Length: 383
Image (tube, rainbow, N blue to C red; front, side, top):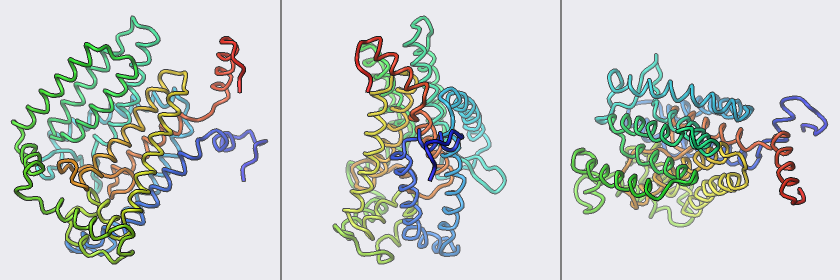
């Protein structure tokens, strides 16, 4: 046990970190590793690989992911901002490279191969983009003469253009919703709300009429006609699981779901562990979002307030999209369930997000001193 009397970096980290956040993130990683045993062996066998090929790779990615999350949580807000700027610049450059030299998967160029590893730059772009935009919004709120909002709009336009070019409409929508939420928190004028809303409607309509794969997915969702095998099978797995599931290793429907270890791992969890277990998963994600928003509402530093809110919204909305697709509430979209689905880029990138959240929500001495000073100025007794 770390003593409160210890003044070393580790003790300072342990007593200032939000341990509820930390426990929630580690719990999700543990659940994801457990579910990889249930979801990935059938996929590996269909590909002619060893049954536990994806389980072993999942385990390999857990170690660096934890190291990234814990390492970033030691950062100060200024260091978080600087790290995000560097990460965003590298990610955008790699997204441009992916368009010309990337690996094409199912008609999209989202991956860059580095040796034996493949990286999806857009996954790392998301947390960095949130933090940089939070900084721009905060600078404009602090000094209105600084065109922070304008720079944030330009940056969003660049990111959205690169995502659409891949094409990746789902990530574009996710990024737009999170960015819009932060802009709203920063005091977005009603004129901008109407303008950006109109742009969003026009963009969505254009994607429907100009991108055949988007047209196909939306039409299949609305009419139920065409190739709906994967979503129908995922629904059958959820129904078969009922409230308490069939038991570990007893899933049958999961064996024929093509992406059971990634986009449809929620359905596998429902079949083997039941709807009540899935409700627990939803509650963990809801806890992360609500606790993050609670931190944000109490935070007096605009940068930390916008960044924490944006980062937890990113995790929450991404999980909503994944679960919504599994429940046939949304059109099919290849998006992972954070820290649960198989995928090295996704897991490490979500741990970057988690590390930034942990760093920005730490109870630092200078932060407490600033709060006490503000209380004294306001004539309110400090807690």
